[in-house]
Length: 437
Ligand code: XLS
Ligand code: NI
Ligand code: NI
Image (cartoon, rainbow, N blue to C red; front, side, top):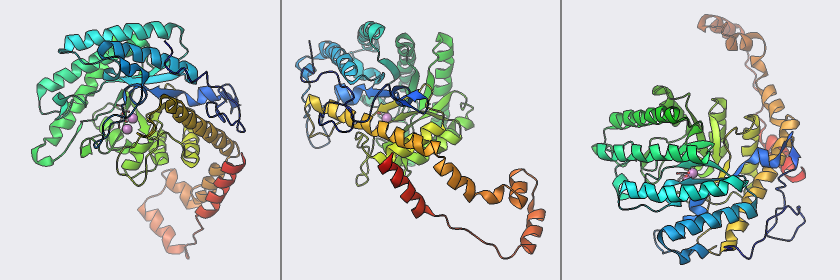
């Protein structure tokens, strides 16, 4: 059966095209800075937003019209797989990502749940033999079911900790079976609502124990995907332990886990944490920890994760600049952790949304590549820190200064002269690139 009969394969038609079901800027085989756009961008479709999200919100019921919703239970799960590979093929995306519970419904027991999963995994494996689309990452949903109300690896209930371990064990086996490039940990319920009932130290220690067990098990079964932590400051808990990239990286170092994990940076999580997307990418990059990206955007007027498709060129340009500076994303990718709005309920909207996101990142890539080729920011930043390239500055960065030598220098050095930071000039230059490249 064809699920999206109104849509043919999406092709690149260029910026002048009037066809909404065509790419304007994403031209997969076009070379940019020595690699194809497809290789740079490594786009991924999120199974949950695209195939299971129903449009409900805290005030209203489902709105999404989805052809597979004529089925129920495992039949619907199977229909979703068929629809998924049709959409992947029509969009020509190289990757997808899912939570265990997105692809198969929970059964009455863990055995039944795993049996449901196995049926879908077998079906996906068949598709993966011929499809160009591969699995970027999978993860475990340990936040929807009521058993996780106190957390998963950070629960107060050891039985739940054990259940979560069984679920991630299965997740790693799934990742291996389907050839996933990464495995993601997003701790939806790993945090607290009030410290009045929380053993903070035990919860953090247990989270680290859980991660060490996952590392050990991955080695045991020969799962070679990259482990990723996806920081988020709040929602659903009031305070999540993986608050932002710096907090997550400090946690990993505290518990000697830093060699096994990288960051999966989500744009909307960055802004919820009070950071820019670029900040979270940069701080991960300079620590050698930038692994993958959940490509979306938030609404600056709303205080929650709105998961909009990324359409802001300014943001995608600066994101692609960080990714190019990182030498690419390696095994990671740009996963559209994004959904069409509740009001955009028709099946075609899934295509318009992905096309908008892919075009926006493709354009961002081209602008970022030109900025990098011209060394725009490198020259500006290099010059701004000139004082550290000679004299007393060089002595500081080379470790040849102490408080005595610095005091002696300061006493004879007057007056101190500063130079302008020129941010308005720089933003003007950036706009020229955005408009002219
Ligand atoms: C939720 C997260 C989630 C992860 C995967 O805010 O972004 O969707 O990406 O569990
Ligand atoms: Ni995400
Ligand atoms: Ni999110």
